[in-house]
Image (cartoon, rainbow, N blue to C red; front, side):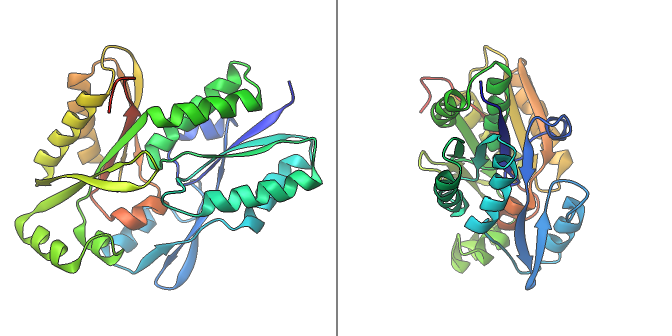
Length: 292
């Protein structure tokens, strides 16, 4: 079997052990704070999450950028020159055009390296649930699947994953244009927090609204119970916007209803945190085959 490398852009959140063990390479992405461009690498070479969330608390204006075709070409060609094919997991095309840029780079590189494979995968997801797909990608390679077999499995597996999120910082959604000023004002007055989920096409939609943190997290547990297979072991990711105590409380609630779950907690990537603000959490897991 021809050798191939596993890559994922930094919008996906996965435990650092996988990266330190050399099982997957995490690709940096840029974001903009108050007009200045910063890079998030998920290691000591870029802005730390502590620094980032301090900017968030200060209400600094923020936005994200995509990975350009030229940058994707640089990432991919590093391996192709060494005779190694590439399987790369990308942020949902429903949230960013980075995946389309990766496809553009892959098509151009195929002309230059016809005997090599460059296969970008649209995860249709982000953050911890993208991390679950990445773990599957790693496991597939360790089981001996070829790059084409791995790619085909991921294209099927991604639709089995689910993610829901609790948004505490309504102002961040307002600044990003995701809700109107009026909705944000009324929601702020009443303490109503939006709950969002990933749609099949990789976009986000509001699926509920609750008043306060505890009611919102209880609703997330209901969402999980309605869709997850609690009878068998499975990985659950909880990613948080610099609110580890909230994440631990949610983890305890999930563990109480799903004792076999292996719960992994980590800080939410700034690439997604730009749009969620502080206090938010994302719950990612694999759904039962019969789940909606």
